[in-house]
Image 1 (tube, rainbow, N blue to C red):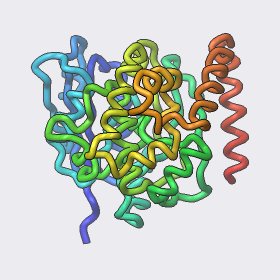
Image 2 (cartoon, one colour; image 1 turned 120 degrees about the vertical axis):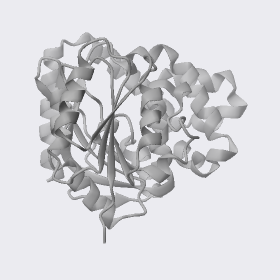
Image 3 (cartoon, rainbow, N blue to C red; image 1 turned 60 degrees about the horizontal axis):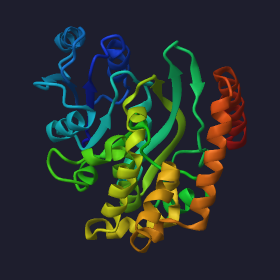
Length: 326
C-alpha cells in the first residue's frame, strides 16, 4: 500500500539569506516529500541563483517564477494549484522544520485519515539566531486526534486555535481546496488571517491531529507580512464574519462561535459586532469579551517590558508547561 504523498510549497521573496537553511530542513526529512515547489515572487536579491543551485542537485525541486511581485497569498494559491500531493506543507522560505517533522505528522495522519490536518508546536527564532520558545498550548502527552467538537471545546477552555503559523501544519489538499476556488483557496481579502480562517474551517469540519513536539522553527522578524496587516483588522474581521454567516460555512459557524477563538482579533471584534449588532451578535459571547479585555491589558503590560524580560518569561513558561505535560 503506497504512502500518502506530501507536496511542499515554498513561496520566496528576497530570502536568499535564509533559503539554504529552509531548503536543507526540507531535504533532510526522514519522510521524503513527493515534490518541493518553490515559487519566487519577483525577488530583487540573488534568491533565484540560490534556488536554481539547489534545483540542479535535487530532482524533487521544481522552480517557478511570478512575472512580478504578487504577494505571499497569491503565490501560495499558485503553489496549491500546482501541487500533486495528497497533503501540503506550506513552508516559509525563512523558517525551518526539523528532520522528523513530516514523519511524525504523517504517522498520526495515517492513523486518523479522517483528519483535515496535523499540527505540532513551533519554536521562535529571532534574527540574531537566538531561540525563544513561543507560548504553547500543551493538549496531550502523546500524538492524538481531536474531533471537530473536541477542537471547539479546546478553543473555549484553552484558547487553542489552528493556523496562525502554517509552517507547523500539514494539511490535506482535498480539504483545503474546498475552502475557495482555483487560485483562490486562501482568501486574499483576509490578508494574513487567510491561514487562520482556512485551517480552522478545516479543523472544525474534519478534526485535527496533534503532535506535542517542537518540530518547526518560526523566524520572528520586524516588518513581517502579518504585522503589516494589523491596520486592516476591522475589515478582516468583518469579512470573516460575513463568510461564516453565509450558507457555504454554515456547518462550522456554531463551532467558531462556541470556541471563541475569534478573540484572536481583540478589540476589532468589538468594533465590528457593534457596527451591525443584529447580524454579528452571535460572535460576542461573555467569555470572548472577557478574553479580549484581558488580552488588551496583557498587551499593554507586555509592551512596556524590555525584550530581555520577554525572553526569560517565555523560557520559564515553556519549561513549566513541558514539565506539566510530561
